[in-house]
Image (tube, rainbow over the protein chains, first blue to last red):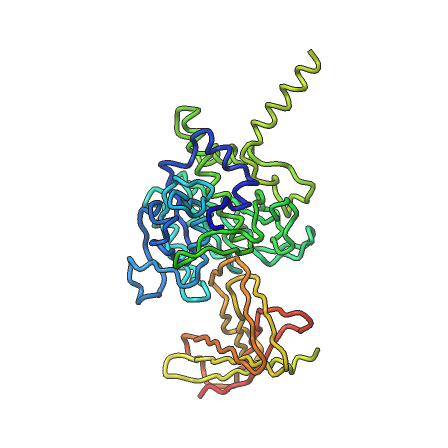
Length: 302
Length: 119
């Protein structure tokens, strides 16, 4: 039963983009996480390289083993490819750069590692940086690294954080998600109901599925995880699809803010406070459905 | 349910260039307890000096995964964890407060406070 389409991929309407031939080809996504099982059959063909910034394995630069499982799961949601009989991520032809910034079995990292990882991803000219992580401290050097990435045209996606209490009036801040420059992703169920744990604050941009998400795990395994960590990679993968599709349509490069506008165009408004759900639910076919609806009402009034 | 069913102990050890904290969480109840963590952060550890000024915090400038994790502690089982403060402060009395971030049904958040001497 492994060869199934994860529910989250389905409800954000990724297969409808694949049907147009859009699978994220030539888009580079840096996954800043606990490393990755680079031999996983669903991931190995998508991984183009990696670097370790943690003190795991004596700090060896090319050691990107995932001792937690989190990074392998996140990478799978972005770009797993089911051609070997496994599961598919949102953008099954996107390229993954594995940037290990969280170490150990628990999956924690120093701010310095994350900052170095962001700068490395920018140097490697990735299109998207995906960060399913967060910390309590607002540090100027971290903000500077994020701003520099965006200035270089990189889309920076972050998990909103899991300290939420379901109350739109109380704020929970997690960094780097709380910086205005990043795309902060909150969590909902596949039925678009708000996840109680999802952080509330004025910088939430949109929500995506983050409950019981099926994806890849180390040692050829699969499993379900829950958290804003699982919501963020749905958006990172979606951005890979959107960027490749829209740049082809417009026949030119789009800036970071233009791609962000295209992302928000592909959301569904929800009856949830904007401090919790931002612009709404990631829904890749939103413009198509709107066009169809408008066409129908046009025919009726004719 | 009372918190003595789960007991958290702290051992602070002064080494030449750092202070090491060894923690141990023991399930003294008759049943298995399932803890849930909302992030990769398993605990918080804060050190205060004799004027109750915060001198060290485990989570400061640290990032964690934002996925839920579970830990089941069987009856009589112990979960050990540790932290290192890579500094030795001036001699005196200090207080270390540890909060276990795992939440379990019908159980108050597990905390422990311990005083220790730096020579």
